[in-house]
Image (cartoon, rainbow, N blue to C red; front, side):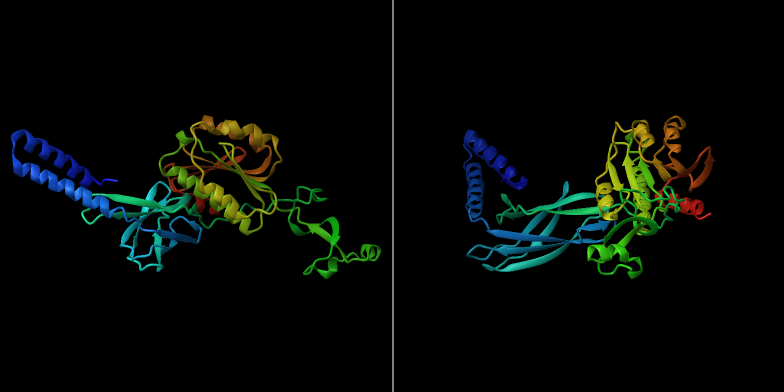
Length: 380
């Protein structure tokens, strides 16, 4: 493939040949022919293509935005002769990261770490690697694609936030499906003993009948069923305020899961994350990493779904610069929850808290401001 310099040489050679031929100027013709000779030499040079293979590892493959992530590239020369020094382009999402590859002997291997950009949240494909080689004159360039691809998840940044307050017992007999976390005092069922179980929970009568040690499986029914509704309506956010809203949602999820509190997230674009048990924060953060605002999303679109599903103790609704009319859509959700918090991100102010009928409104410009206001409110 011709480079910019190569295309310029081609154009100049044609102009010189035509001008010299028309004007019968031998020197111009000779100069044009010399440029064509350079192009021929460059083409012959490019016939000997390098045989390079590469392997890549991303460490770690999940990071919080702003934290370092490293790509470790191992390149091997499979040709019978020494390979020239090259510049490899490692594709990273829609951009590329240049990686210098030194000259390698036949069969030699070179490992080089390089920094991956993690300043923005997202799910990025790292690779394939494009190994570029050019002639000594810089007139032509060829690229060799390596097919291996890795994935890097850049999670939204989180802040130290107090989790949803623990709720009152909503089912004194315990859920019959066994969805509640283990370790409470509500009896759910009998099961076979496994190593590490509390010996005080052994049910001796059932053990004698079955010939196996049986233990009481107790569950905790006092933990809150909390829900975060994240509004993804594009028109309500500025360039950065949507990122701030995602960071708040990630902070609430992290705070709840670190305390073993069940938490779910629903977005107004139809995405549902989390469950009432066994929630891993990484599973939710992976999905939040790829979340984008939608022009068709709205709080009204999700109102019916939330109002008709199983309720809980706490509800947090996160949105942008929503008007009072748009926030009215939260009204039907309030009856399903004991506490309701509405957060507006991208709004001027440093985390002001307002008491509304049946809800608390927090206006904040950034996720840091929201976290400070949230902690003041919850810890009271």
